[in-house]
Image (cartoon, rainbow, N blue to C red):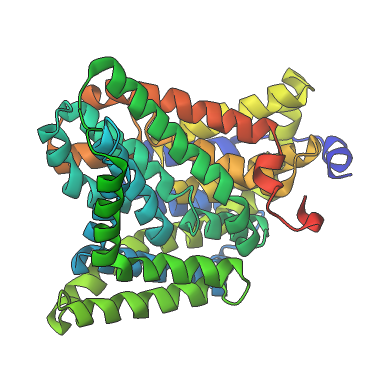
Length: 443
């Protein structure tokens, strides 16, 4: 077994490991772009250790992004940007509001639902937080929610951006760990919906306690008529997620092909309804390229770093250190979750996946954790980190678009963190949640 092989290899980490890691931490603290910090650490580690010739760095950078699956990333990013520019995201909000308007806290619940709908297309939590936040936060405040709580609600709902397929995070972790991306998308459906439901329940309980928002005064007939009118008005917007889900889960399309068709369909709809013009393309493409330009260099520079860490025996060393604390699987799983949540607080998804994935994966294999289950647990725990006070990434995004204090938003985010953590633990300790929809060979 892999675990027996790892235990037979003593690992002694020296300055060739600690100095580059220290440099990486310092650069991140100094707000140097993450890809530059990772690249600096990787090159320094290779120079000090001599485990790989520096002449191979350029080749490693190219091979790090020379994968067909990665072409889906810019396509989903562009689809999300087109959704916002064409106003189709507003159609999602109208339908979500029509679904939940019968209940107290209806618009708050609609905000969470539209985050999930946006996640099912864009695959990005930060994009979802910014797009949905601009549409809903002011209306949430008008409905009676305190602004810090409205910001926390959007930040929590936007976490589904990396949890509900198709997700950029699952594309990257599938690439890094060699797991089928389409299978990961299928496995993530139930866990992603569970997180969405947890956020809805949290908002409902908080709203009942503080009576932020009223509602629930219409009859069933009125609710049905309202919902039908919203669907009739914006049904075409749902062609995009419909094509993505059907294409991927039926096996007829790869994630990349689904992303390409989603872009074409979204642009076509925009032209047909008159909300998109050719003059919008330069700004739209530049905006999407900027987001993609942050992700791909991180992946490229992370590959030589991951190779150097593997040769130095860092994954083996981590496994040995972790199992010296406890040999109980439930303890080791909890340890991994805490590490991932802490990492999610301070760093984006992509570097966390490409750095921590290869380190934690051997430990998951040692305790015979299902590979698919590990991937789902890892992405979900990172998602919890995005709203964990006081450094969660989504907290900063909604603070940036509203000007609200980070600390005020963080305090209101605590209940959401608690309920999302419960779901994360369920995913970690109940394999069937992640594997029940999968073919038997993957269970």
